[in-house]
Length: 289
Image (tube, rainbow, N blue to C red; front, top):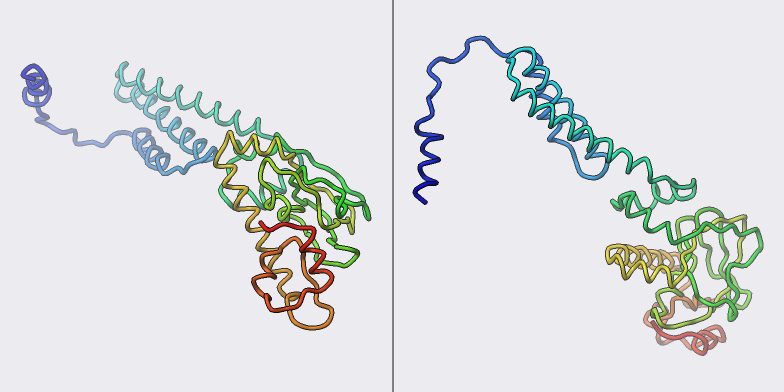
């Protein structure tokens, strides 16, 4: 303890103090370096924030190196600043390579900019999501799922086009781009359960959608809990949008239609209504969430 105190005393107490300060200011290169340091440390997070920080700090250290070489003529100051410039330059190249290496198809770029980027999802995280999915085309009047026949073995998100949802030939609602095709079916099953569609989904126009296989997606969820929570939020929001879209159908009167994909809502909202044939169909062929 005494040795440490003596070291600090030698550094602070016995070090000669400045008796005469320089009257003239340092050159413009030194002040430019200081400005670059101030602006550089204002950078944000993420890949582009790192590019911003390392580029400005690197330029600042480069200016300090030039200042030390030209004005101060101090080899040690020049050496340290130049080493820090090299480190910043290498970090900038490394981050730029990571950003450049994350490339996607057109559909994935639109999906990221419209849905995932507003939620603050970074490109590396989005890359993990798209690595286990595929883009599928669906021609007009072709079926994505058939009632009582198609197994629930994937989760799909519509990228372009429009899907018509029907049950026993009766129209229920449309599915538009950036909406899940089968979010109610996905949410109704546990990871170990299997099921089949209780509705028919038909393409009204030429469509393209992104599909994740159940096993691959659950494996991704097990490896990355953040992605699991992200999909829980997206699927829950999608189901809520479908509820609001069907709000005008929940009413008394002739021609009443129920969406059998959203059972709890109509059971809780209209418990006193006598069951119609469509309601009986739902009760026999679906399960509560």
